[in-house]
Image 1 (cartoon, rainbow, N blue to C red):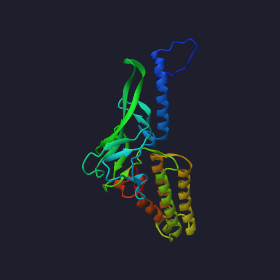
Image 2: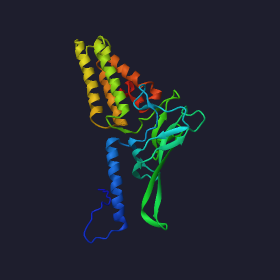
Image 3: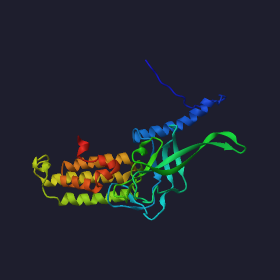
Image 4: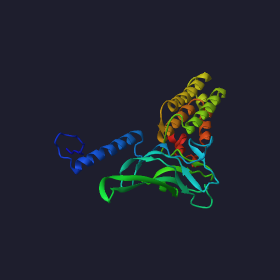
Length: 289
C-alpha cells in the first residue's frame, strides 16, 4: 500500500509558526486555484478571467471572439483584466492587470503577421525599505509576440492569434466570458440565423431519407430548434470558457446534423474555414470519428 500527503495550515493556540506552516498557507491558495481550473478545463495552465483583450472591432464573421485591430496603430493595446497564470517555475497565481499593456508590432507589416500575442507573467522578489528581505513576491506581466506554435509553452498565456487573412485576430483561446460579452452576443445573433434556416428548410438530407425520426418533417425541425434553444440558454445563463463553448457548439452541430442537416452545414460556415478557426476547428464531422 502506498500513500501521499501534503501539509495543510491549521492554527493551534501556542503552536510554532515555522517556515513549513507559512508554505502551507501559500500552497493552499495555489492548490485551490489549480483544483478549480482543473475542474473547469483539465490540463490547462492559465485562463483569462476578465478583460485582457486587444483594442479593435469585433467581427460578425468567423469563430467567436474574432477581432480586427486598428491597422494604422503602431502596435496592439490590451485592456486591463485578470487571469490565472503559471510562471516559468510552475507556480500558479491570480494576476491583476490594472493598466493597459502595449506591444509594438514586430514588423513593418503591422497586424499582418503570423504568430500569437501572449502574456508573460514575471515574478520578482519584493523587499522593504533598506533592501530588507520580506516574505512576498511581486507579480507583473508583459505582452509580446511569438511564432506559431510557441504559444503552447505552459508559462505563456495566449491572448490572440493571427488569422490567415492578415487582418483578423482570434481572441477566444483561453478565456472566460460572461453572458453579456460582445462576442457572446454576436454568437447568439448567429443562432437566430440558424433557427430561421431550420424553420425555412424543406424535407431533405440523409437523416430524412433514412426516416430516422419518422416522416413528419416538423419533428426534425423541432429537434433542431430545441438544440439551438438549449445552446442559447446555456450562453445566456452563466459564464463559459473556451473549452465549454467548443463542446457546446460541437454538441449543437451533432444535433443539427442528425435532424436538419442544412443547419449543421451552415453552423460550420458561420465559424469560417478550419485553418482560421483556432480551437473551433475541432467542430465538425471529424469530431464524431
